[in-house]
Image (cartoon, rainbow, N blue to C red):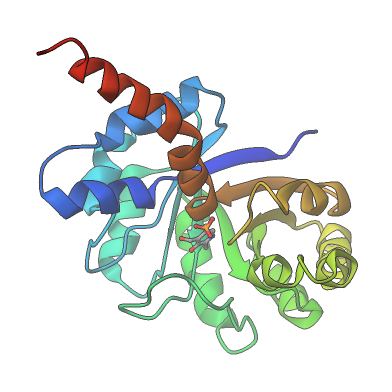
Length: 242
Ligand code: PXP
């Protein structure tokens, strides 16, 4: 079974919010990603709503035809209420602190086991699949199983960072982590700093990788890969005027 690509559209919301209007149109962008083959859409609303707003999440739900994945820290009651109201295919729980630029650590499942168990039950009871963001650490994954989560999302920043120096060393802890998750019957997602450069090697080496969610590199690539065509279109508007 091929790994699903879920496109994280936070950056599109950041760009829109910079001008206060509706350009680019986040809802159209999400639908177009699906039309172009994305198999899921990911959003990560944060309490300060600096990119995805809570209302965006509500507006996206009826439009989407693929898997909707909402990420966030369930410490905020507003986040829990939003997810329960929206009922996405999947909620990914992330231990972000307020104001953090981007996610930079996985759950300490040992310290937060009982808490995670409670919030996971809350979402699973209404049919929402759960995933929790964890590092490639066997102990954290073994305890993740005890929280009753359906899946884990492997935090891939360390892989991405080490990949240019030694892809073999970069992938090694993730192979071990994924093998243990598979033995335990946990589904495996992955994300953070995955890119055109490092994605294929990761997917080839991780058994049972169900989904990757990618934002920063994918949106940056879309700008580069689209800029040549866009400049031609603008130049055409300026031709033969005088
Ligand atoms: N997974 C989680 C939990 C994240 O917080 C993020 C970033 O919002 C991603 C995946 C995607 O990371 P990137 O933007 O580097 O592709």
